[in-house]
Image (tube, rainbow, N blue to C red; front, side):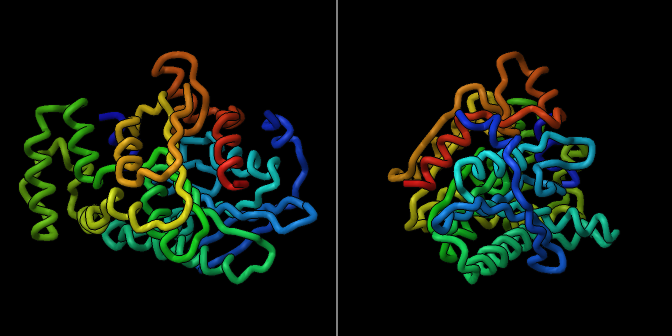
Length: 308
């Protein structure tokens, strides 16, 4: 059940990109949303990428407590080296934890969408950018799909699920703890029908505890395969073949739902966007290596997509 714990934790110019100097602009979008804007100094208006992080209290750099890999920071710097501006931000959970105001039972999936839409609306009023793209990583992929329906010029999904979250979890359990599958399926069905589940196994308490159920219930209301079809803008779907959290089959579901999208599987890239040559141990260790750059091909693929 290692991957489930990760998901619900709570909850060639790349070298030059890291060395290239830039002046970050710190922006407060709402009282709970703070982030960093970096804008290349070029002769024309650059495109802007709004980067949405994965599940849990993920900060603007892609990090959480006890997990520092700087994946989103390196992604932003790689885009900057290709003359693409970016805004990356701390999820509201980060600010709530700092303020000691985080109350798990009050969290809703819709809050993450509201935050991302507020960011999009903020930058739509900023005349410095030619176009605005949404990049969503992990859970942020689904958040980004819904957000992009509000007037973005393009959308990029990185390691996004292609199934509703309950189906994703049941599929993971089938691989990791098959004895819990039937109980999980029944509990999710109860939650979907009644807004609450009671008869779940103690082994599933990390998912179905009472305080977390409202959040899971609201997350279950969004089907990625439906949301992605609502996008009448260019779409890029990316997954890594070394991702131990989100299988390639999830990306395939998104591609099948949106056949006109661009589809890229990046060799040796894992869930935190790093290149992995070795085994699962190396893969897991990379989640906490702060200076390991992201896969160069990821930067190339996204930059080429945005510059089309």
